[in-house]
Amino acid sequence: MSADRRVVEEVVVEANERVATGVGLVALRAPRIAQSVLPGQFVHLRIAEGTAFILRRPFSVHRAHGETIEVLYQVVGTGTRWLSSREPGDAMDAIGPLGTGWSVPDGAAHALLVAGGLGAAPLGMLAEDLAARGVAVTVAQGAPTAERLVARDLFERVARTVATATDDGSAGVRGFVTALVPGLIEEIRPDVVYACGPEPMMCAVAAAARDAGVACQVSLERLMACGVGACLSCTVTTRSGLKRACADGPVFDAADVVWAQDEVEGLKR
Image 1 (cartoon, helix red, strand yellow):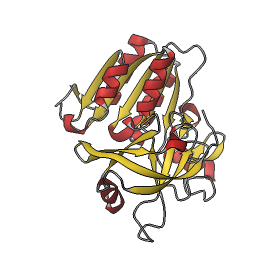
Image 2 (spheres, rainbow, N blue to C red; image 1 turned 180 degrees about the vertical axis):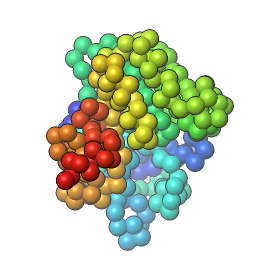
Image 3 (spheres, one colour; image 1 turned 45 degrees about the vertical axis):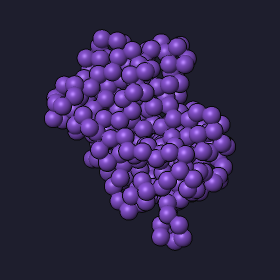
């Protein structure tokens, strides 16, 4: 789904809380963005004041309700530390909604959502949208530890089943979430699989869906300088040519993405 309704808007922090180890959730009053954002789209936030950070930062919209959008973020550097320090009433500049989001196939009755780590971020709004459409939702979620699982309340509220895997076995089965996917596909026979997380995870999920003959969409993460398709800093190699993650994605048909690096290099020659 896509919609070019992007606006530049001053957004105001309503709440900002830690929701998992190293992960925060900021609620932003953003009336114009909230009214038009679609599942899988993102916002480009101006981090810090002045010229400390020239480039904006892209963040998936995790949820949208009323005049509010919610953004999940992991504190990994100076910019996200700045974001984690914002308090209610603080304002910042945002562009959004941006990008092409998830699409729901006609007649879909059951969907499998696969989230790895902070890959849960763009899947929250999708899970709520699917449930509202009457689509049965199953979620497979993975993280290094139980303390790193995010959006559990949302997934457990809207999904029929939430299967979990953690690297250390502190929640669900021990291991990677990808180990759960073939069995879930065989058990529930989803009409579509949606995935977001580390690229090797998405590659494995795409392969499992392909082998089962199930459609699969993935949300790719790339460095984005402009966020609006002008700078070409976020290109993705696909079987139909180079695409821009910010404008043509971040959601792509998994079957169109060229995952293997040697194949990417071959297509460049």
